[in-house]
Length: 176
Image (cartoon, rainbow, N blue to C red):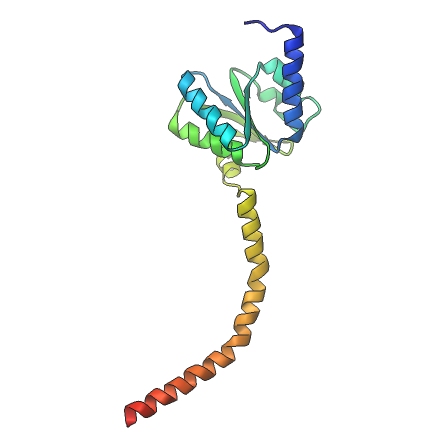
């Protein structure tokens, strides 16, 4: 099916709009996957907040001009699936990593985060980034640690006194 000029412009505008607000991009080769497998991948992408699109490479290059994903233009070769993470930088990488384990024909070719082009072997490092909620929990734990340690330090002398009195009581009870 050939696209008319107006359809191509719409696709470029749509992908460019997503690329401007996305945090990361994963490009994967999808040839060899069945329609059912691609449908399952798209459902999972929607559920995890990932915008996924199959676009001609020339249109994708045009859409990425002037965005932080312009560094990927040379990597767009062959039949590729583009997955943009909109809310969580590691969401698309996690999705592609999990599906690449399940279906070997899905192969990640390149990825980018904040204008930095990464090789396909760096997929796990991007996928292992904590989600927003996990990062907030880690930060709160770090902020709470000094306060917790301070409170434990304040309570320790009283705890030692109570243990000492209990030991004296137990000794007197065993002597009697």
